Amino acid sequence: MLAVVGAAVLLAALWREHGTEVTLPALTGPFAVGRTTYAWVNDAQTDDLAPPPGGKREVLAWIWYPSAGSPAAAPAGYLPAPWRVALARSSGVLMSQFLTRDLRMVHAHSSLDPDISEERHSYPVVMMRAGGGALTTDFTTLAEDLSSHGYVVVGFDAPYRTVVVVLPDGRVILRPPAANPEDLSPAGQTSLINKLLPMWNGDTKFVVDRLDRLNAADPSGRFTGRLDMGRLGMFGHSFGGATALQFCHDNSRCKAGIDIDGAPYGSVVKEVLTQPFLFLLSDHGDLSAPDARAVFGDIGAIYDRLPNGRLLLTIRGANHFSFSDQMLVKSRYLIGLLQLFQGGLDGRRGLAITTAYVHTFFDVYLKNAPANRLDNLRQAFPEVQVVPR
Image 1 (cartoon, rainbow, N blue to C red):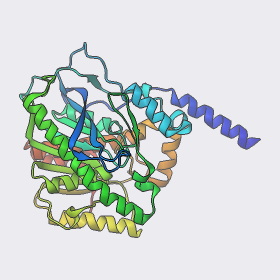
Image 2 (image 1 turned 30 degrees about the horizontal axis):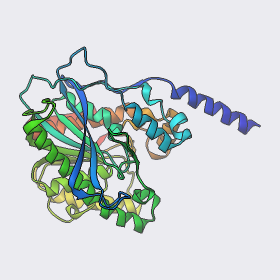
Image 3 (image 1 turned 90 degrees about the vertical axis):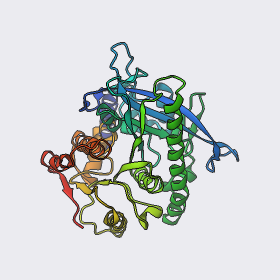
Image 4 (image 1 turned 90 degrees about the horizontal axis):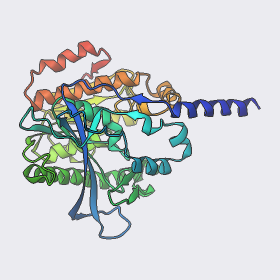
């Protein structure tokens, strides 16, 4: 009876928390931020994960950009209603109704489809890639903050690779279990990752090509001539970080990149990477586990061959999700359990550290800001430690 009563009390507390409001961290840059979306079909590539053979690859691009800050612009919801419904159905009742905040009550800082700011003629472009099956919007805090510092930030979700995608024509596409590495044996994970990385890399290149076309002639007129594609960077979390590494290795157009807590894969592990790169990692303890040693060995191999402009940092107390909105959007009870086993850094503190390093690194290597700004950040964030080589 005590167990039943305890479970009922816990569910009641979770349900009450589910309906409370939460606001993402305030912007630290001078620009207001707009958000818009584009759906693009890659007619040159078939999707090997799609059930109908021969189907073309598709992406749903989310673009955050410095806006004119019109008070008449409607706020952009954290996640559009059709996406909320689809995500809830795919996640199940316990996760969506009890262990996650009501996403209608999560308040971001973007407005929907405003004009781009006229303060500058054009803005550097930074690609952003979420990890695994995560949604791009799970990193809204990072995207909005970077955009507030004068960047166009472009993330995208891909059917059959992202956990769920809702396309403008109403199609809801779930990631099949066979495309989820977490559902597979270690050998199966390696095989799938080796298949997925070229697809993620190809999707990124396709989106960059479409941005070139937008810059040349955006049908809406918003981005025509406003994207500085000569100052292109990329960052990603987890497998998105691995994608950033491989994309920058393969594409000289990438001028700087950041891997946020991602294990490297692909040819970049054994070959030279020439662009400035930041590795921003969670707290992996004493690295006694063989898997952790192997990952740090691969990161070290890349880092040791990098030219000027390299940083290898870890955040004391951070866990794998300290870099995303999940630390604020999930139930504090679930987060407390995660922190008990994987690191106790406060969620907002982790996001503050990450946003500061992301925009400062790109300021230095895409905008020619003084490099000592990165050194100065360690005074504000003593949790950040240089990993010795």
